[in-house]
Image (cartoon, chains in turn orange, yellow):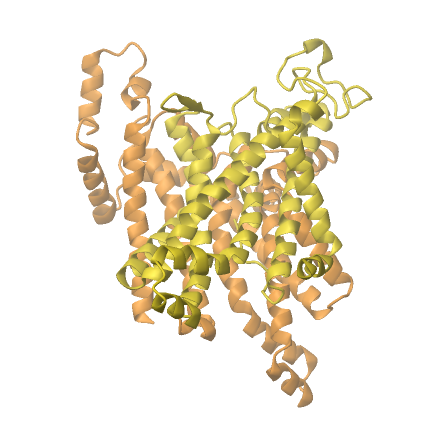
Length: 315
Length: 294
């Protein structure tokens, strides 16, 4: 077990190191110097050289990467934004809560509805729920989240005037107002994952209910809900695995969804950083997304290997 | 032959429906110039924002372009990116999986850890960052100028490769230990012939299933990246950019602008998903529900 965890951690760290390097090579090779963009078109050669020197941009890429990495690992310091001069961590912490609250609400919705629909469908094979779940899975898997967002804005916000069509209110503005602004983005994001999780829950629980121990438990006269509870415990590992992966993927799609609802989250910060060639901010954001995704993958993998005895031996 | 006709009879109507959608979209992409009644790019301001009628079946957009023609041409970008990325991902992933399973030992470990690493890279963020940094201009390879989508095809392909690497590896590892492979080795068969002639054919069915399902994901990714302005560049028609343009119509009420490009994406994705499920049932009826997620 320890060897497995250590091995997967090493692989994850390797990914992060490689990703960090790739980010450096990529940003430094792209067209457009940040100095030109920050200082404006009429900056002199000297001013540009000075800017590049003070930000270390004149050094070889590998040296820049090394010192960035050392700062990140040793001091948790991601550097300063070229444009605003503020710490990258401060810049990110301004927009991260927006993205995080949308993703968390979406994850919660996906988990609750995905599990509920999956269980209901598995308990009534061939019944109404089963058919609805199958149809819903096909539909849910095929509607792009950003299209759903546009349609929701049209009907819920413009026609019915139930929710604001976009924008964002922080939690400090009141829970109701906050949830009103993130509800539609979260639902658009969640629908695909409701379908994914419901499908997995249904398949896994149906398989578990066919187990010999379920028949034995039934024969021994255990109450039906207890039998289902036992089967559910055995059916959960692949669902948890998928949920962890989904959580990581949701951040990526949240970038697109935030554009639809005009929300000032990481998506706007990232696109601004790209257009202003604000390399350190850009690196910080992409690195953050990658860390979240790597962690989600790691958790999914470990859940799979530890909760599911069939997978343990293949470690 | 009898075997196949028997198997095909087992495919239920959802599978055929999926196949029909896929054929419809492939047909639109290939024969777009013959199907589309109007030029998808030419601006005709006198026709702008016309509701669907007998002339413009799906209405016209802000620049007076026929939505139906643009949806038909948009299939080209979607399918090129979806299928192109899957082909690249399959080439990389399948070779890696075969190599790791056949070689074993340190090479196996190394390749599979690299696959784990690639699988842990978040696709959309990287697609946005890379295209954002490199710019949306064409890719110049020697005398050939590929459109911006080439970057997306390549990146999505690389990031799809772990899926193929893992399914190939899982099957190939079992096959490598099979007696017939040992027998082939004793016969003095060349390694290349064993890998490509004996091991690969056994891995094909899960590869085809994953490929079909991944095309659907690739199509949504193309649409999403184009939607934020980093994919297909205007005025070229793409379902993602059409939806992006349609955002201004949300308030003014031209419902056909956001509805039809979105329907085109959904029908194509439904098609590939249903087809993928049917192919899986055909090849391996006992396998569990797919765990592919994006």
